[in-house]
Length: 283
Length: 187
Image 1 (cartoon, rainbow over the protein chains, first blue to last red):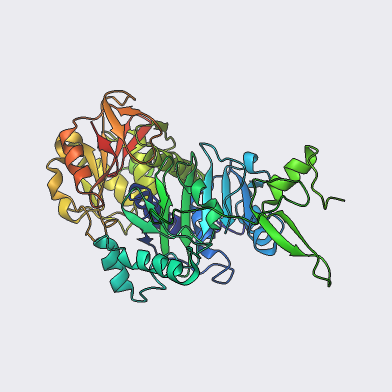
Image 2 (cartoon, helix red, strand yellow):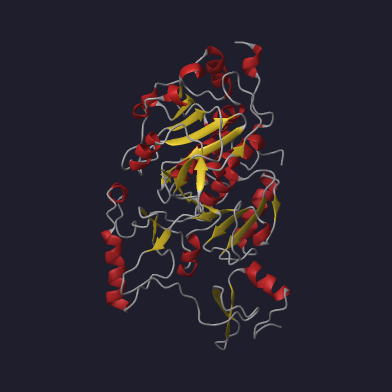
C-alpha cells in the first residue's frame, strides 16, 4: 500500500482523467480523447477501465469486478487484486454491495441503483471504425451526425441473413445525438443502458478514449420500423438456478456433445441458488 | 509569498481529492443536485467549495481565468502554489472562476469545436445562495424534475442551444457545489 500512490496512478494523471470524465458526462456518448497511460497489464486486459476506476475510486468504496459476468475469471481476479493492493479498497462479489463495479462485456442482472458507478472496459470505442478506418473521417461523421453508414451495415445484415445479425457491441444512439459503441456487451444488455439510476463510464486504454452515460439518459438501440431491435438470449432456463430472465453461457460438459446453459452473471446465479432456486442440472 | 499561501490545500491529497471529485462528478451527472465538498481552505474571496474544485481539477495543463474580485494577489499566489495553473484570459482558459456578473460576457469563453466539443471551458460560479429551487431543469441525469437557483436563465438556454458545443458550469456556495452541463435544458 505504501509503495504506491492511492489507486496506483499519480495525482496529475488522475486530474487529467477526471477532467475528461466531467466532459464525457456533459456530452453523453461523445468520445473524449485522453492521455492513456501504460498500466502494469497489457492492452486488451482492461487498461482503460482500470484507469477510469483509479480516477473515481475513494478509500470508502467497495469494488466489484466482473469479466463476462463472472467474478472468478482471470481478468476479474487480477484487476480486483490490483486495486486491493494499490488502493486498499474493500471488495465484494455482490452487485448490491458494490459502489464501483468494473465490467468486461456484461451489465449485472441485478438492477443498479443511484450512487453506484459502472465502469466498462472498451476495446474499440468507435462504433464506425469497422466501416471507416480513418479517425479523421469518423470524427467528421460524428460532427455532422452522419450515421447513414451504420444503418447501411444493419440493412446489409437483413439483406444477407433476414434479420439484424449483430449480437454484441450493438450500436446505440444517445440522447438523440451521438451513436455510441456500448462495448462488447450482448445486445440482451442494451435495454439496461437506458435510464439507469447509476453512472456509466467507458474507458478505452489502447484507443485513448473516455465516454459516459449520466443516469436517466436515453439510449436507443438502432433499428428499422419493420425490423425492430430485439434483445436476445439462449432459449433455455439456467441449468443451476433455473432463471429464465438472465443471460446464459453455453458450457460443454463432456466429449459426447453434452452441454448446459448457466447464468453468465455468477453473483445473480449464486444469490438465486442460495435462495433455494434449482435448475435441472444442479447437483 | 505569505505563509498562508502555503496553507489551505488538502491535508491528504490522494484521498481528499478523490472524495471531492466524486461529489463533483455526482453533481455533474445529476444536474440540480447539491453536494458538499470539504478539505480546502482557500484565501478570500474564494469559497471552500471553489477552492476544492481548483485543487481537484486544475494543474499546469489547465489555463485558469480569475474574474473580478477572485483576481487578487492572495488567490493568484494560492493557485500558483497549490495547482500551478497558468492565469489566462477568458478566450484561452479551460477553467474560469468568479461571480456571475464578473464572469460575463459568456461569449468570451471557448465553447469547443464541432468535431471536438470537449475542448470547452468549465466556469466555476461563486454564488451567495445555492438551493434546489428556482429554474426547472430537464435533460440527461434528471429522472423526473430538478430545480436550481440559477443566477438567470437566458444565458443557460443560449448555451444549451449550442449543444454539443457549449460551456459547463459548477456553482459553489460555502462548502456546497452543484453543476449544470451543457446538455441540460433550462426553463
